[in-house]
Image (cartoon, rainbow, N blue to C red):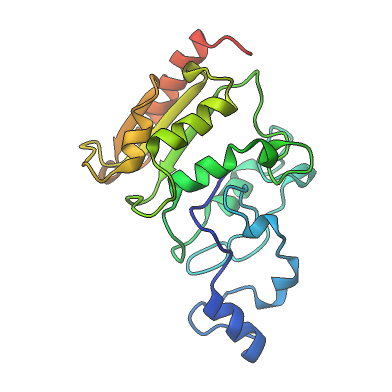
Length: 215
């Protein structure tokens, strides 16, 4: 599941241009003709992304099997679909702690919720943060960690946390502070790209999985 750090969908300026002109000059491929497909979940922080809009975003609905907001092994064209949902663009914010906290809410994962069925007692939860420094999320690392722990039955060993940004963890990096609260965590350097970070994360997941006892 891919979750963005935004409290809104798309770009208000483009939405207004779509209504007045039928197109957006700032983002030429903005999906003006598809605005009727935007749902309440698309506008809800913490919901899995299936339709991102804005600068450098996919600007189209992503076709996910079963109507879910996350990918499973039932998904055809997995790599292509993941590329679609992961292309969040450059028009939003970095409210990553707030987005994670919202994604963990029981009502978000309950039947009828935006992410219904995503959290499972028999599975590890791997959280990967990719973005800038989160200065503006509501709450704090302690609150966000508590939300995650509550969602995973209070078991910190059921969670793998990864941040790809700054391994120096400066005092203003609240995401790094959150990540380091969990025993299985990795803080990778974004300057080195994503490949090495995900290779290290794979080893960490294997280690956590070997110790994990399903709830």
